[in-house]
Amino acid sequence: MSITILTPPFINPSCLADSLKNHGYGVLNPAGLSSFLEYPLPELKSLKTYWDDLLPDNSLKDGGHYRWRRHSCFIVEQTGVMQVAHRAHFQPLKYNALHGGMHRLFEPMSDHLVAQSVWSKLLLTIGNICSSVKGEQPWYVEAHQFRIDTRNGIGRPTPEGAHRDGVDFVAILLVEREGVSGGESRIFEADGPHGQRFTLSEPWTLLLLDDQRVLHESTPIQPTAEGGHRDTLVLTFRSGDFLESANQ
Figure 1 (spheres, rainbow, N blue to C red):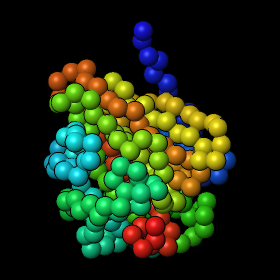
Figure 2: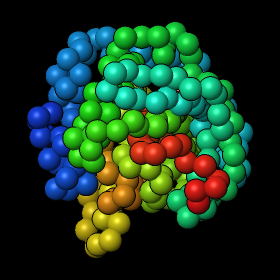
Figure 3: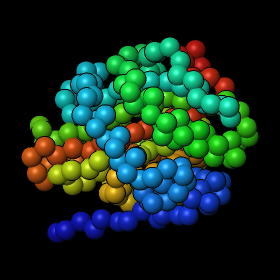
């Protein structure tokens, strides 16, 4: 039996803030993201080479060897983007039942990637949407580069299952998807029975979530060709400060 691949409910970039307010999420197709950022799509696509230099995630508690990543932190204000000193990633157990309570230190993102003008533009533009929904303020941003591969069979984008991240907003950008099936995005109301499911299949599709209103997960991927993998950029925007163990 074949599985239907559902197309995301794409919206116009001008409706992104309203979609967050009304539904808790919004999805832009690649052309929409290019328009949203006022940046040519080929310049976004050129960033994918930085996903070929990720390092193994050795902290997976399910014993898997399918995730590669880098991680850096930034403060985004209306006046600009500032990278902060390298720090560990932390989530309380109530948000991540598998890896919560751990201080996980990953290698930082490439200086060359962070120096790209499109990088600051991306963080500033999403930060402006966050501020339009919840008020103008500094946003404490954690940036995660992920590659989930299938060299050993199944790869799990979210081994912790459906979850919240303990932040205000989560942006998930598909960078590349090659030789895999699965990887369906699923969104559930945090305080209700309703949900959505669809597959991000086009590189530089943006899914933006209100983390206080919805839970999210991505289903496992399986190889359809040698070298199958799914690359994403995940950006979390939090008000007040970065998530610390003292705040759990």
